[in-house]
Image 1 (cartoon, rainbow, N blue to C red):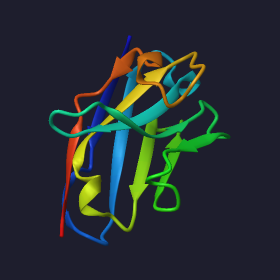
Image 2 (cartoon, rainbow, N blue to C red; image 1 turned 120 degrees about the vertical axis):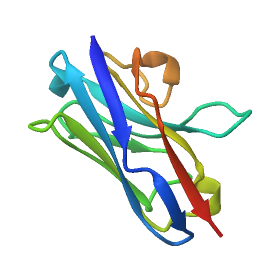
Image 3 (cartoon, helix red, strand yellow; image 1 turned 30 degrees about the vertical axis):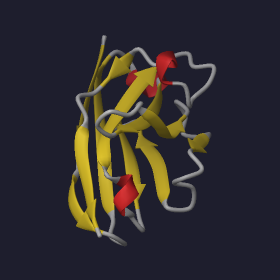
Image 4 (tube, rainbow, N blue to C red; image 1 turned 180 degrees about the vertical axis):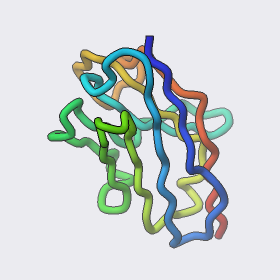
Amino acid sequence: QVQLVESGGGLVQAGGSLRLSCAASGRTVSTYAIGWFRQTPGKERDFVAAISWSGGSTYYADSVKGRFTISRDNAKNTVYLQMNSLKPEDTAVYYCAADIQIRSMAIKSEYDYWGQGTQVTVSS
């Protein structure tokens, strides 16, 4: 089993920054790919970013490219999502997810393990 806990959400003004953390525990999480997704009420949970187990490959949704950066510190079993130039449309609950074998990083059904989410609110 893998347990994931997100933190770092909050309220920020448009143009500001936040850094989300996803702390993992359980099995050898350093061998797991990690993804970030976000969801607003009444909508699907959408892909935001993902990182391979080594950190050598990263993937981003078009809506966040150039503004968000995903990284990981396997020594700390933690994945980060640095979010800059935030916009009101980035407001959502952000979830991290993990799995060991993922064919497509952007597909949420590929991930077996999920955190509880952290709220990000961007005011205009």
